[in-house]
Length: 174
Image (tube, rainbow, N blue to C red; front, side, top):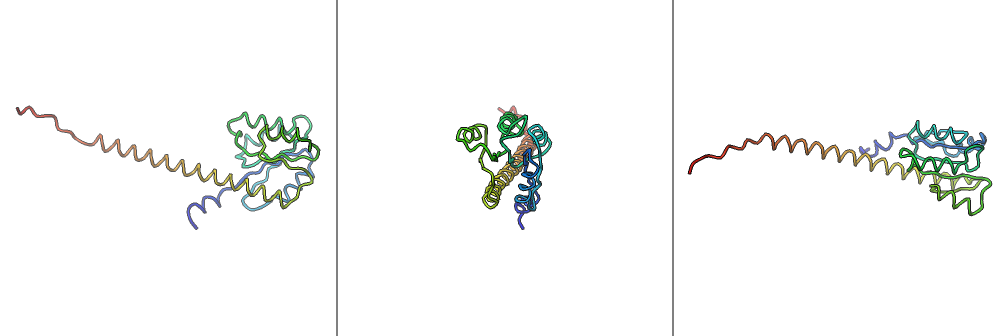
């Protein structure tokens, strides 16, 4: 096992599932449960926003129609926050198949828009793909941090060596 594989396997990816209907959350959980995943449930928009701020979320499955704050509002708030602006959102809905709602979903930052009833094979495939992208992003960020640390160490070493060089004063032999 390489260091890269070990670092990828150690990461637990958090998936936030947001739906005001508990049965829908249980169905999503049954489809998405897998090693290396932590499934976080939220029953409302405000609860989802709290979970997003408390956890490092890899992906959000977001119901469009919820009482109070709908999925579009949650997405807009997510996109305005630096911590959550790049978290992928997959909208899930049973009602809004109208193109204007689908467009609104993509305009508010969705990476996908799915209609209930969900096909478990298609959902699992899409989620696996988005989580794979998240893993690649994390690995790239790790390599960037590592390269920056090496660069900083190199700069410190270079500065130390330059300051250690003794330059003799010029002689007055003319």
